[in-house]
Length: 490
Image (cartoon, rainbow, N blue to C red):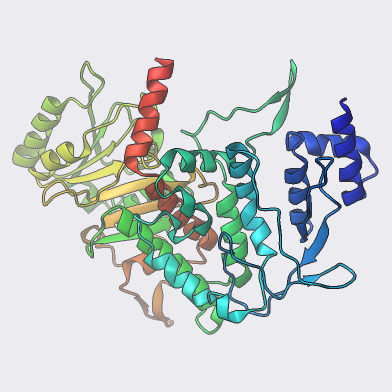
């Protein structure tokens, strides 16, 4: 152990009052022996901010502890370079202080420190109401945000508006569990997560947004008689609006939050289409490919509907000649209604399908085309209405596969014309106008009546955030990153 490390241990113990030296060492190692960063992280976690100056020895003076108050219920992020006002200190003279802790040592340190900044900002609220954005404005901003403004929801990333590479680095530095050590047969090793096809990882700044902006005002969206319920409803419907905007939905499309992934979205649509009804089933045929995920096979198969498998060609793509022949056969001769349910990108092979081209082909034979975007949605553009004939009748999304997406629900985006069912697929609270002993009247709003019961409210809001983040990064940036990785490894 070097003398410099010993000094850092002594200093950190004086700040934390931790007597266990090994605990101190472990904590400093977690922050790569960056003393400023480690102290900031510790004080942030205890609800205290710091004001410290560096001494000639290179170590900071023992920090002045600053605790802040806010009488305004409207939370906002503290903007970069914004002065603190009316802060109550824990120092003896209770004088106002200004922080000199904002200087960063290096780009790497800047990104890591910024990942903690939103937590620090939580404790830097002030009693000056004139500079505080009301909570209602925060909600409205959430609903009005546009893809062209990266900082519309996350103000602290506005510095990356014109530097996508730094934005990617910032996202990477915010991944929860990035530096976790795990025990292996060969000792402790840094974990490398390589299973994003199965599920994404959480992001610190998204969880901070939820903790600071949403959870303090959380209430059930089925309630309408209190402020918290109204604000929570605005957040959730704002998320729905954002998703509609980013998938180019129209008034003919609905966005339904359901279950925990594409599996739930597919099962929801199967129930809506009433394929278990013999009269409906006998007049319908469903086409699938040979490289579908089980979730896009079993729900259809278990209804007993006629199922046709479309093979792939030598390139691993859908055999379009075979598909066209089957479409013509079932449309002209068998005269059954055709449903095609294909994946946009296979989670088995990774091969993408030309969704617009295939959609046009299916619609030429009056078929419905459903796309499973479970493996594709985090990376590819989703366009519900690419053209007058290349539109998509339904899309299934596993939002938990997005970076920042854990705990988000599945999403069904579909044309209103599909919802001819008089009874919701999942009946429950929030789906009716009234219920008597002899009669039930269900509401006409499709999105509301197909989301019966108390939904995953926080997950739906988080889904809006991760869609916004994906749009902020941009499809071209994602494509370029994937091309670079392919070139590197293959």
